[in-house]
Length: 287
Image (cartoon, rainbow, N blue to C red):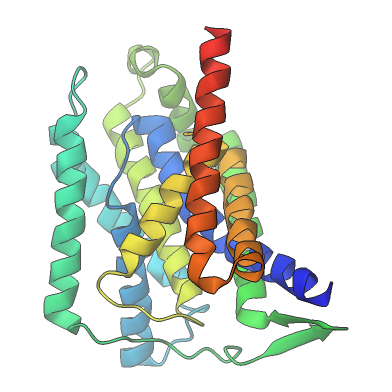
């Protein structure tokens, strides 16, 4: 029983990271209705920004979060307004899909060229600290990351509900034409939304740096997980992304206990496929 309790605890902590990266993807899709295939690479860039701040200025990864968020927001907004917006077509999504895939490859190779294939990390003041609750051990960096997930989610909710740009984002996500007629500058909304998604990915990366390594292809791992999360929770659903992330984290940790660490990915993907099949059966039945 202690082993399973520890697995559940670890699953919640890991699920917090998955929920954050899934949240960054679902916000972009909810407003722009595009699937961003370079979301994992944005997380990877956020990790490298955090590493550079640590390597050059000795900044703790958690203390670097505001700086990483601002840098990634600006980068995401510029990326959207200069490249992505030019590839969006009303009747064809293939252009933006190919573009985001290409951007992901570009980001990977740029980081490979600059940082090589070495593994880098940033040591936080709490990196090696743990909390013991009876037979359960909780990693402090993972716990702090989970708390950051809660804080970020609350802030996003307040931002979307009470700020002017947040209301404009919600209006654009519901009806872009109606938003344009009402005088909302949808170009600004799209840039802000993509920047927000990039900032959340950067925050996720900064959290990861306190106990994980960054390398040029790390984004592929978390990019795949982000798609699973938003599919489980529903594309465009913020609560769904949170639930999907936690469920995915629990599947991984419990799967590694039941069938072994070597087969935990198999448990995740088999469960994912089953959920897709069930969803399709329900959709067909309703249709």
